[in-house]
Amino acid sequence: MKKVVLAYSGGLDTSYCLKYLIKNGYEVDTVLINTGGFSSLELKATEERAYELGSSKHTNLDIIEKYYEKAIKYLIFGNVLKNNTYPLSVSAERVFQALEVIKYAKKVGATSIAHGSTGAGNDQIRFDMIFQTVAPEIEIITPIRDLKLTRQQEVAFLQENGVSYSWEKAQYSINKGIWGTSVGGKETLTSNLPLPEDAFPSQLKNTTPEKVVLEFKNGEFIGLNNEYNKPCVNIQKLESIASAFAIGRDIHVGDTIIGIKGRVGFEAAAPLIIIKAHHLLEKHVLSKWQQYWKEQLGNWYGMLFHEGQFLDPVMRNVETFLTDTQKTVTGKVTVTLQPYHFSLDGIESEHDLMNSKFGQYGEINNAWTADDAKGFIKIMGNAQNIYTQINHLDYD
Image 1: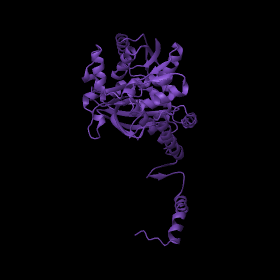
Image 2 (image 1 turned 45 degrees about the vertical axis):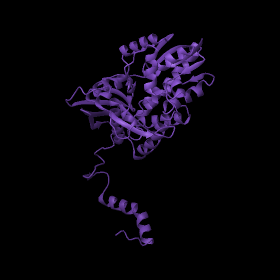
Image 3 (image 1 turned 30 degrees about the vertical axis):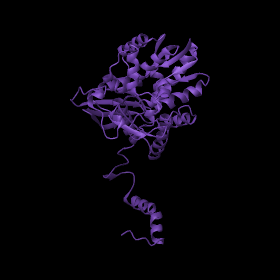
């Protein structure tokens, strides 16, 4: 039998793929690449389901720390929010899941790799581009894309083959990761309907406002409430606290890689808080032009990452720039958590450029005189003054 490695999550799409591949004569190894968001019980249940469906061997691979070091760190450095909304919850992790699946397939000598992407989404491109780049000799099998299946057809196929799967549970496609959870379903296929409350995995549990203190060192999230740990641990702790307030819910609307508009719901309490807190700290400690060029390159980095171009060498160049900008991004940010939203209270940093010895905005000037200010204003206005007078412009 030909051996195929299936990128497996335990959801409807990959459950269909597993059963379909077995029925078509393949020996299937399933591998779940855990980028965070799965509890030990969920990982165990996914493994059990894989074997129940016929997997010859199932493996759970934890790459959370690697994912942080290679990706999330730079998404924080760049304050990356796609269309000023989406923290690349799924799009970033797909690249690393693809790389790990390839590594596993080579290890077990598989001749094929399979995934459950459709032909109308971004994931097919992210997976296939990585597969083709790193292992062009390995065949790519995509049953759902090739057969143009609907979710209803997938459910019917599984039921016909003795697999009971509740349509109520399968009506939403949910992808969990340390950097957020995406939620896709019938409402996100429209332009006007919001996702219902119960579509989100995290429900409102805490209604009493709570303050948390995030501490950064050279741009990395090193501490939470004066307790210090690895950034990926701190992210998960913050997610546990903030998700109880149902913070971080939104619907992202964007241009897909294949050219159509797409809409997907997500919840990302910790990512949104971290990015906004980090950005606030940067406003205090970075120069105007550092902030300007970070915004330009951060947006480009996020766009290329989103579109599966992570292996392009320019991404390493941008990462070098982003890392260099973080030398003074050290300090504490206080955040107030409330039901469905959060607010940034302020920062403390030895690198804070709002140093009162130079002046206080709108109040006093300590480092220059009134005559200095008048001269500066006159010189600064020279260009527009000359243009206006030469061209006899009337601004009435």
